[in-house]
Amino acid sequence: MKTPIELRFTRQVLGPMGSVRLERHLVTQTLCSANCAVVKAEAQPGDALKILLDGQEIGPAVLESVDKVKWCDLRLVDAVWGGFERLSDLADALRKGGYRFQTIDTYNFYRIRFQWPYVERPPLQYEEKPPERGKRGRAVSLVRGFEKSFEPG
Figure 1 (cartoon, rainbow, N blue to C red):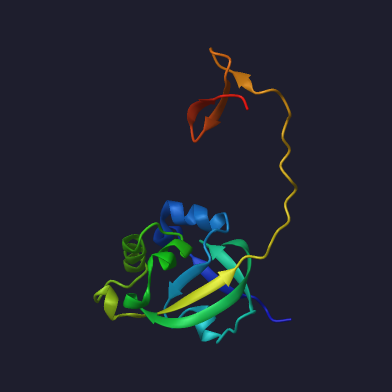
Figure 2 (cartoon, rainbow, N blue to C red):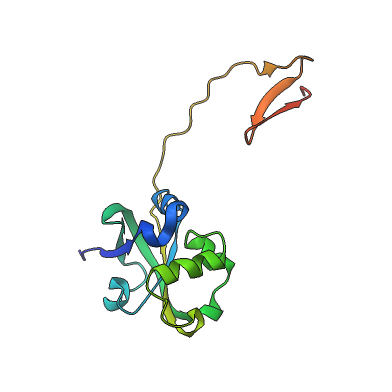
């Protein structure tokens, strides 16, 4: 069995939100240079990866694809899959990662897509109890941090 290839991320480049997204297995793509271990190893789809954040293992993943791209080829979905909210956030992270000596559109990147293996989790346990009632006798629920009342149905 082949040893998993290490795919390394840093909090300095990802930022706080990107790091949390990686830890929650929400990041499924990264951009890197030709010096990246995945590119150097000439990895193929299906190869095993070990995802690391600042040297700590986050978990195993499976390589989906590697392709060479330029900045003009990237879209918002690439930023989101990489853990960012906007392309400008991705550009800022790339500059922090070393792509700061030329304009960002002159660099070639390797887009690495990967999948996290499915981990079966136990179902959430809910306690059954009657809904809380507000002043007027309507049921009250908490939605996105705000109280919302609704008519019982």
